Length: 401
Image 1 (cartoon, rainbow, N blue to C red):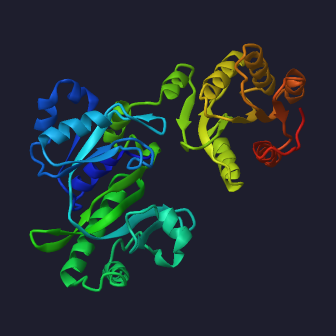
Image 2 (image 1 turned 120 degrees about the vertical axis):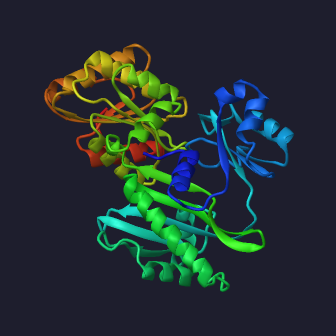
Image 3 (image 1 turned 90 degrees about the vertical axis):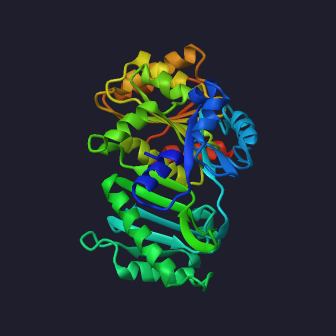
């Protein structure tokens, strides 16, 4: 589960990482008047940065990050941002943070590496940009070093990263290296304590304050293991308070789980189980396509509920294709097919559908979907992705109409 930037900042601060002073303001507080906003930011020194809190990138280009030199500008900028729509996400809150005097920006993260099955440090002396961009353009500037589960952060980790910093900033001295060591140990302690999958500081900035250079965690991204909610009481509170996508709320009414994915994606994926969904996403993205949203049906869906699921997931006008992958156990193939036919008859089947199911009552399911315009059946997951790719690119694919 990815956390909002302000929540990552709260965890950083509580964990002893150096951060600027900041305040998180929601639309409810703003509705109570300007005085509430000014009071919440009273301890901050101007100028400040007002940052939209949404789970998507491109906030700056969309106007979701603004500077304020005084209280009057703070009120104006905050009111401009609250309620803004950024790539389909409505802004319900902002983070107000003191502006820092940046000398140099770096990238630092600790993540759970799937290959080594353990924590690893990722560092780059090129910070302030997406690490994927660095990996694509200058992969030689990304450095990795594993963390031994029993040893934790040791002196050689700090020395290793400090040496890489000196590639672009030779003035990085022993005092700053000591700061780096403390920061690394605190970041790893947070990673363990909060059941994190990723703790990212980007940028980790060298900033000037009171005439001296110090490290600051200017921006952060934290991803937490959602299954750890029983060990992390704050996570349940945070999740309950989070504004939800309208389609997520509607899906919950039927017992479905709807999750928005890539804002520029065009493919919706529907399945019955997180493992099935992940397999679909992996194969679709491997072929260079992007997923806009996924919907997990859970178990035992009837034709009526399948119809509602199709209606919900295709109600997003920016979705161009629907990919359905079902293992017919508790959720029977004939019920899935019946739901798709009901959706067609009700006028909900507005986009091309690639369907693959296997299991209980498959033969009957194939009879039910036969002849439905816009529905292509694939015999396997790989064939389904190939058909999807062909249809998306405007060429003739396989499958059965």
